[in-house]
Length: 291
Image (cartoon, rainbow, N blue to C red; front, side):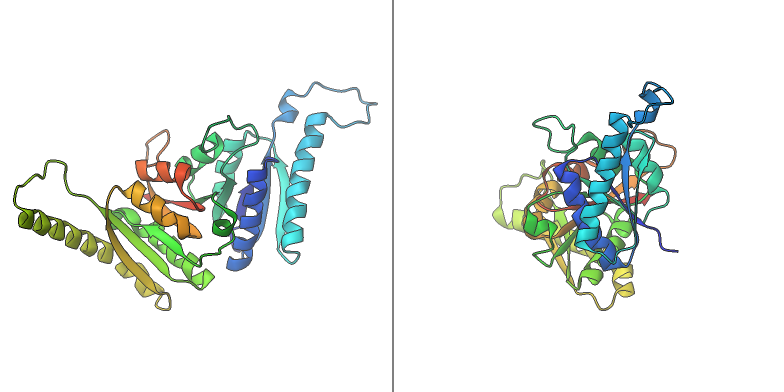
């Protein structure tokens, strides 16, 4: 049985955009869709008399949020295998528990209770940093969200830290029928100061060649598993988060890895992934890499 694609909804416009994205993704991959809304109303609702017929306001709101998400999904794709329901947990716990039996999680970039000025909702950030399955945070302009560029990008770190992200990105490119752009950033060390321009150019060339070799190594095995997908390899000088943020402006999906260490508590999200979740111009998929 195929694991479902799970999308979290909270009634915000951002979460409804996430539903749209998740519907298209589920249809593209042939996956069932599960719509989840987290609500703790039952834990804190004052007991009502047995003769009361009205439902508590919090229960009504929770049911309405789920119904709105489900109706939006049905209008977008009526033949989709879909379930929807309210979970009696806080939002982070509900999504992290759902992740254990999900192919991926999809969230919006801003929550209903978001603080003005925040670039990313706390729920989406926490889930992306702790989930055992890939998390896609849906952000960017409509053309990026709707697949208008026909371009998937994966940011490649070292081969041992990028295999899961590369495989995820190749599957996405294959399902969308587009090429994959594999990008690795490289930088000159801050202490590398020499007077002769030829020496500077030679040092830069060596570092770029090294970045290119690492990129090839990171892609080799996964590319063999997807022989029909074109892969464009790019090495770009600059900080990785700046380079990937720039290429995200003309991408439908940006894929990055996040290293998960066994036994380590707290958020496990690298600086590059953290920056892109806040600033990328397209949906961002964070794919955990176990170590």
